[in-house]
Length: 173
Image 1 (cartoon, rainbow, N blue to C red):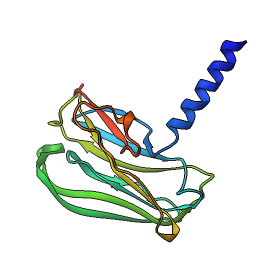
Image 2: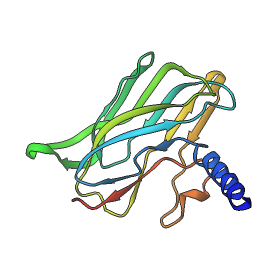
Image 3: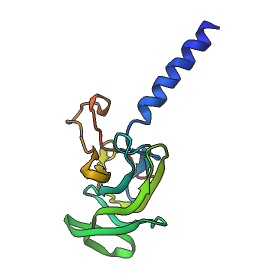
Image 4: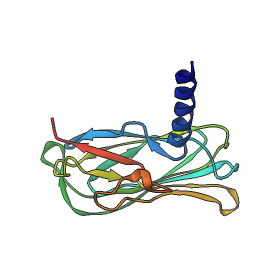
């Protein structure tokens, strides 16, 4: 009986920690293929609703297309990539979406929602490494939750206060 209670308390603590920030639903994906990024947003800013979600696209994630959300305005910020990437049908991409912004909606603090985009993970990204998607939640009155911290090489993300959602890159199948 005590083990069951202890396990329940441990799971509750883990669940609280896991839902404390914006996370990716799918935390691993193979390079050289498509990827659907689902950003799970579990709360607002200290009781205030989320009214804007900004996602910075890491280098090597190309051909990004965000999913519209009813009641939210959708904007993309485009710019050059650091290099030219090979894409489908022998095409080359040297620029594209660098940031996605959903704004004008309202996600109350007591609810969660998901913000979705799809893209292509360049084939030359290093398998075994992690890509980070910095996310900023904006709320009324200038309040914001900034999930933008990226760990130093070899350091665990779990030690960060405001970790950016991370995607572990797997080898191409």
